[in-house]
Image 1 (cartoon, helix red, strand yellow):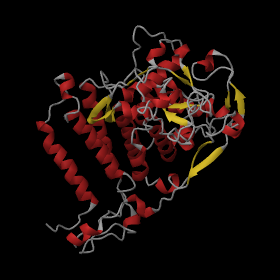
Image 2 (cartoon, helix red, strand yellow):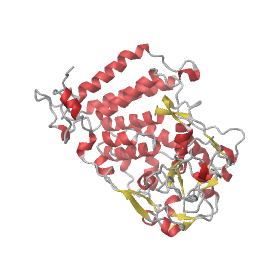
Image 3 (spheres, rainbow, N blue to C red):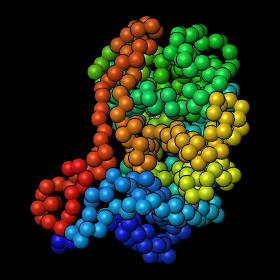
Image 4 (cartoon, rainbow, N blue to C red):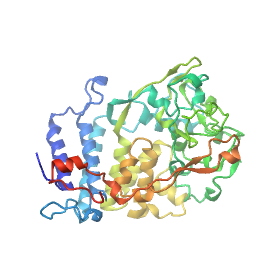
Length: 461
């Protein structure tokens, strides 16, 4: 019963070996429609294997010298201390195998087909819906490689991200709680309309991003922002995924019940506005909510009626795998054309030009995609944007060893207790947090250490 703790490489090798042994006995892909959704098949297994090998190749596990003191009783390091590029090569091979197998199995990047009764007047709406439904629509979604059918996005789950004002009687509707907010830090991560970071875009007034502006009543803006509404410049001229992912003050919220995207619901996040009109304690507190996690087919009635369309949450989808492959290629070979091809495919689905063209035309760092370090930064931001709110960033930051940088930042949002624009758009600190190197690995409980003296406690605990 008292087994010694073994190295992380042995753990990874065991997991991959077990997947490979199971592979021949798995069905290649779902064979009985919805009856098989969520079952582990070869498509899912190959995708998970690729994800595991990327994890093994990442800085947290590949030559992590911060863990040098963690050794077994014989003095052997439990974390390898020498970086191995070969691990990235193996990860790239596994990613490509998973991508190719998914393709021959009918998997592809999801695009939204508007129901016949909807009138869509803006290309931006279509790009946003491509992005939204790639995650929150499980029926007919050929992009999802593995669904978690035991964790469905139920009515209660989606209600947590739904502006209360969508239901005229939400003050007494306990199932619409609206308490999950998106931080200002994440809102900043989304690109400008030109497909580059807002702080890099030569045409974007980054220094003046928080100044008050009146939204022009033109087609360029009116489908995403309320015409003639006072908001901040930060909300204008952003990429389609910004508007597809986030609900915010002065924004629009397209749902199927509106029939026409020109009739999308307006959102006012100030006190007294339709989102915050009831001033209850469980309303969101940052000024942003996640539109991406709410299915557009949900309906909100006037008599305590809240009908949500539940969906199975995808554990891994093709866009995730594309970006993992691009990352593995970049780390093993540098910024190759093939790596850019897979990043660009994800961007194109949301209406953005390719990486090289976007950086050449609009970035103040036009050569950024041509270096391994530059493309690494781009891939990290692309994953943050494309996979926002899907539970990926929590683990990505850890495997990249970026937590000390990212998770020591203040958690901020707008002053949602205000009724007018000027005081509302004052950034306020909601709380500060501390992440130290020991937090990458949580402690093994003292009870387990007593049961098995051969275990070794993680560094710092």
